[in-house]
Length: 138
Image (cartoon, rainbow, N blue to C red; front, side, top):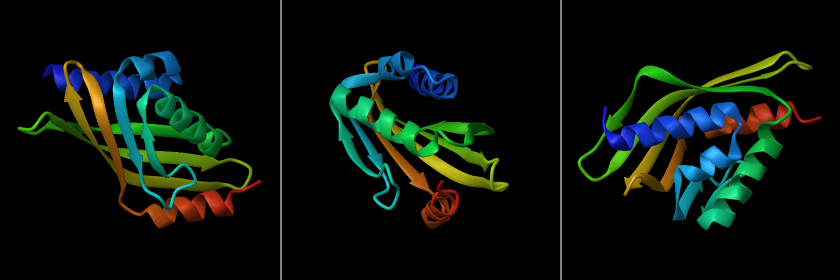
């Protein structure tokens, strides 16, 4: 496995462990995180401060739910231009309403010098996420 893929795998492990310090260690100082604008935490986040703001917004949105982001067996692929593409499932459960979400997601990560410099998240059906969040609002 390549060093770039290893960095992205470490990011996934840090997110799963809810370890903000380890998440930030995967990012370069000039990180750009791109989330789809339709999401409550959508937009572009830049730099270390932006990465912290993104993490806080993500946790505020998904914190009330049992959440798992699970890489698939053959989920990581490296491109020729310093990118790693990850295909995984975004799973969440609203236990109070009995509503479940199971959605494919794609992450595109630009990795340079052992850190992620740009992260772009692509949801297969972002409207489904928005419906889940709206229908599960407390």
